[in-house]
Amino acid sequence: MTGKISHIVITALAVCLLAFSSVGHAQAIDEEPSALAMTGDALFVRPALFATTVVGSVVYLVSLPFSALGGNAGEAGEVLVVNPAKATFVRCLGCTRIGKKPETVEQSDD
Image 1: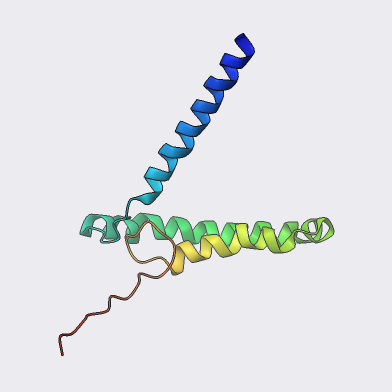
Image 2: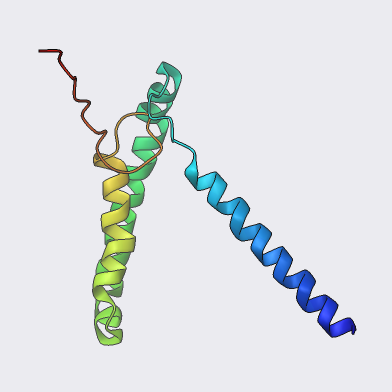
């Protein structure tokens, strides 16, 4: 009897967690950063991310023989070099998501 109740409680908890996590992902992300966010990004975050890219590149080069033997050189390069470089150079100033800000298309009334 106790085992059946615990299974029901665990299943209900899992369903609730899955349902609540999908609500958080359904909300739109604001991609119009403020002047303060842009300034902080330019002065503090970008230099730190650039340093992370440089250090990650050095770590990747040092660990390349070992990661090549392990068969995950591509994955190591992606994590240590490519992702920090994208966050540094491709992300729009003050934005939270990596990638270029999408171009807005104006609809004209003809």
